[in-house]
Image (cartoon, rainbow, N blue to C red):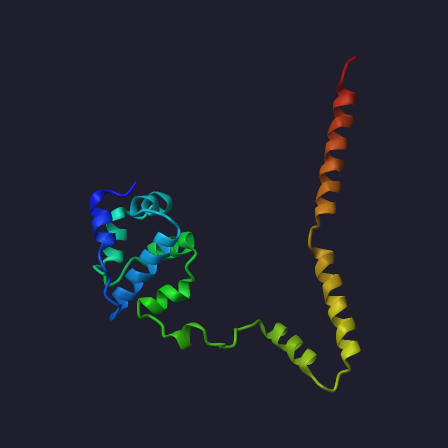
Length: 166
């Protein structure tokens, strides 16, 4: 339950954010309230001290602990990119840019081959089907796990029957 001090602070009007700490404070506070949590609740669920949460929500922390920010954002369902933007570490363009991902050179080669307009789509589909076949061949399936469990269970049951002196 919220104490009187927290209720009084939360009941006051909040000025529009004009610096990164203010934007982060507003982001955390609004997500917490939307979740119907008090600062104590958030502290108890995340392991972040209530005093840290209070400092964050009132822009009294210029550089909050990154791991603590991750934990709170994850718990409150805040996209971590939004926290980085709110803290001024990234611009919106940087956070949401479609920068190319760095892939393994073999994966890049496969992508190049599949993007080649000189190769017919039907051939590409066959290759993809074959790659899926190979991938699935090496992935354990639920059925295989069940068979292994049943085989092991049956073998253990057979041993216990064999060793039963009755």
